[in-house]
Length: 281
Ligand code: PAF
Image (tube, rainbow, N blue to C red; front, side, top):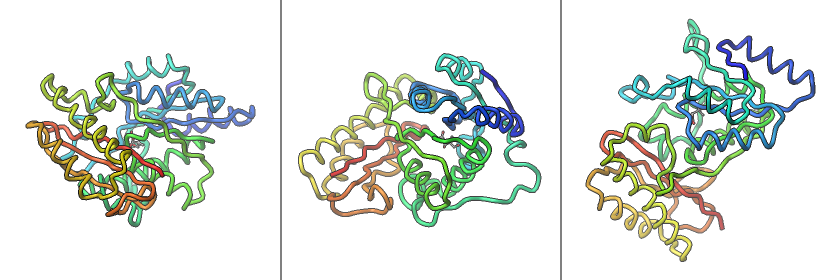
């Protein structure tokens, strides 16, 4: 497995693979890898000949006052996990390599970032779309693999690839959870033991919501009231949002009748965690 830091080295390696007729799978990450990321690498390994992983804590997707500086980083641990998963190439660039002097270009969504995470993090998806576009241009993958814990991100990237006629195929992989239900996230590391316990309220509320929808609940207000009441039973939890949006347009709906995304962001102490479920009829 190669670990490279420059765009030039990535392009040389990938060109060499392509010259040999090999297909390329790509898993973009911000590092501090966990089993959620490993599941993406496994899927990439299954579907493509060579697998490239990027590890880059992307400053443009963090807003002022967010956790860019505190975001956990551990390249040795990440490299060991990639090696164990049979990854062929890690791209670990510096901020200067990705956003050089006089950097000026961004990729923006019109409305897909209006609700959910985009509401409380107004510049987040602009940063995500920009860095993912850059990474796609650098790596030039056949397939790219994203986790569905970041459901809005997944929908946005699929839309961007379609709208901008990018050649990559975007593949979504299911949320990976701890045994007790908590969705795996690099940010879980911020939680104290007491907060870790309290964080179960997210997955428990997701389970409640899913049950209600499966049992025929169509009214978004009724669903959201029940979900919010459940979250409020946990004293350490503070709701950022709980919303039901159309699975494709990401705009709010009042009735559950087409494919929907039910998503939440909840602060447990100072840590903001997300969870969701998609429901298709
Ligand atoms: O999901 C993530 O870890 C990031 O948003 C991504 C896609 C790697 C872009 O920085």
